[in-house]
Image (cartoon, rainbow, N blue to C red; front, side, top):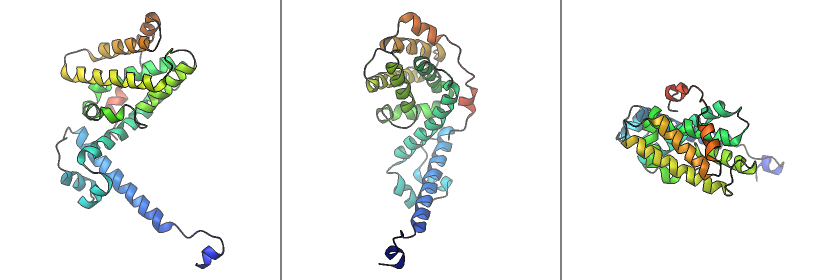
Length: 226
């Protein structure tokens, strides 16, 4: 036992903290590099090129991710966290959680045209992202839960509501990606309207919420991927 331990002090954790910080920096560098390739539409890029762009070794890549697909999924989730935080700034002042959910859902649906590369990867990883605790899902769950608690939705199970919303969202993305001539805003708003009625709102009230003007969403298109 050393002097620090005899005196009841904890051993210095500096080296461990430095190691953890280095690991975080490496992981962040890989994610930023992946986001750059996503933004450029270069989804078939080899792992070696990603590590070169991140300025890390190939071994470092596999210390953090098992595959390029896992890295890209993490990069998309990170990007969606950023977009979700931006959406929160648009809807933070809406006191009605049902209206906040509708606005966020309508804005999120527009990502399929505004941010097609991230949207494509979101669809590719939809089975894990719908119930994820990162990205858009926890924000949707928050609004659904609040709307149920305040009697705005008659649905009793928030997670079921999230699964329904996620399923519709994936369907929307598939439809809009395979039908590029379809009017995205009309399609997203109509889907949101039907989803709100599924959650227990009257058709008239759902229609009213989905016809409310949305904030300027140019920031969603112009914001960096990460």
